[in-house]
Image 1 (cartoon, rainbow, N blue to C red):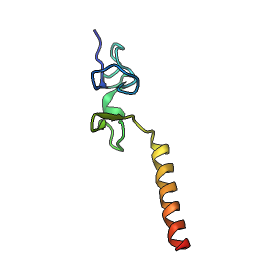
Image 2 (cartoon, rainbow, N blue to C red):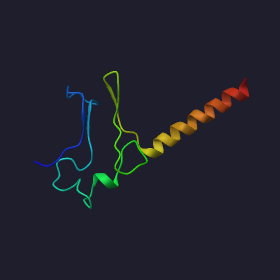
Image 3 (cartoon, rainbow, N blue to C red):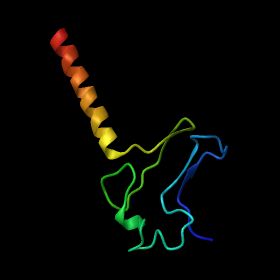
Image 4 (cartoon, one colour):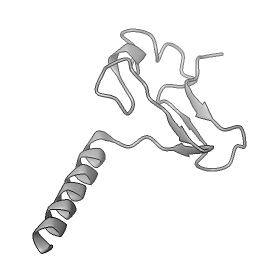
Length: 86
């Protein structure tokens, strides 16, 4: 069997589990492989670091980096708008 990496809360319900790309593919996670763990990351800017978020039994799905930046920009813009309006 090939390696699998990810998380599950054990229920099997949609949105409660996630596997990294390359799971169950022979050699995919090895250094130099197509999904080498040391060359990639999840919810982190540091290669080899994978951060899975769970709060109160709820799994937060991984968010791509551009989406995080867009949400941050929208948040800053709304704060600026509220301050200007007040």
